[in-house]
Amino acid sequence: MKKTTIVYWVITGLFAAFMLFSAIPDIIMVPEAVSMLTGLGYPKYIIPFLGVAKTLGAMAILIPNLDRLKEWAYAGLFFDLIGAAYSIIAKEGLQIQMTFMLLPIGFLFLSHYLWHKKAGIA
Image 1 (tube, one colour):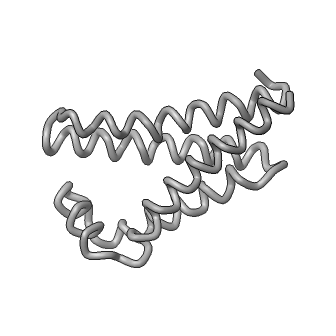
Image 2 (cartoon, helix red, strand yellow):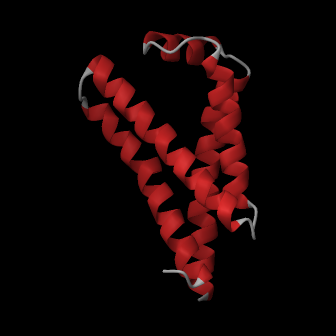
């Protein structure tokens, strides 16, 4: 059980860091983030909202004993990642660079699975 807990926190920490590092440019409206998202067809006003939502989701999966909120956070982060991948594929087509998206999506699923295993739910 101790090994599962350690692996859970490492994977969850890496995943939360990825989400936070992708959220900060959205929150402060970095020109590169704005041009990327507006290039995909998103309006400017949604960009800081997405950044704040990713930040809150990352915080929720890191705080223990918030089981119901944690489930919603995992779901929201899943929709964010899948929505981003879909938007890029719809706009630019399927490219080899999109395989990078498998890493955070894989970390999300692994973190969720390990959280359930650690909690005795899975």
